[in-house]
Amino acid sequence: MSDIILKTEGLTKHYGGVHALEDANFEIRKGEHVAIMGDNGAGKSTFVRQITAVEQRTRGKVIFDGEEVDFSGPLDAREAGIETVFQNLALADDLDVPSNLFLGRELRLFNLGPFSILNNRAMRKATEEGLKRTGVKIPNLSNSIRNMSGGQRQCVAIARTATFASKLTIMDEPTAALGVQETAQVENIIRTLKESGESLIIVSHNMRQVFDLVDRIVVFRRGRIVANLKREETDGQDVVAYITGAKTGAEYEGAA
Ligand SMILES: Nc1ncnc2c1ncn2[C@@H]1O[C@H](COP(=O)(O)OP(=O)(O)OP(=O)(O)O)[C@@H](O)[C@H]1O
Ligand SMILES: [Mg+2]
Image (tube, rainbow, N blue to C red):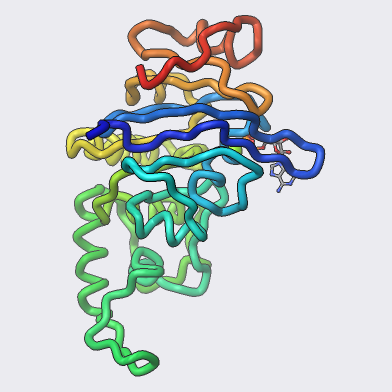
């Protein structure tokens, strides 16, 4: 059994003439936490969208938990065990917090095709427990997401990833819109995921956060992976040099 939970081979995405992602070879081990860094437009979110099948990739392979996969969409990826917090949040505006947490996997009292009844009480209870575990404070769970601040929405999306056990969690800039306290909460959630042995890919521009949290840093530049660095073998200056292109030549040689 391989201990690689996710691997991509030659993953490529072109938007017409824009080569947003070019030939990405990436691996992450079970339990490993990896940061993806790079300038705006480097292809980080594009990479996340190809793995989770938000879009159709141009070419390349995705191997998840030992099997080549071709997810039909993000819900399919989620069912397979990949929880994702997207940069532009995929929450349903008109639904309340529990409904968003359980979106696509609602609990039902009984299920007879169109005649099914949602188990709202169970979903609300699980939501309260999930939020409690993560330390995320949402004043009123019955409020629809529409009436929440950007930071509160982000917290709901992140609590969702921590509520369900998954094989891999992907967070695309989870704290970019958060205040100091909320950021600390999210970082605690990430530490909890580490302790429970879950794998994580986090896209972040925050050097302090990355060095606090992850085992390995992968740098994207102009659609390509240009560096694969163990945290203890690099530093902020080094990473910035790869991000800006001042330094080259630490390309991928497998999971660190
Ligand atoms: N739907 C799209 N159609 C055309 N071009 C796109 C599309 N989505 C992204 N791009 C282009 O692909 C490139 C990579 O974008 P991407 O969103 O992956 O960058 P990023 O590394 O996530 O940046 P940021 O740090 O700003 O989030 C950019 O040049 C962007 O303009
Ligand atoms: Mg992005």
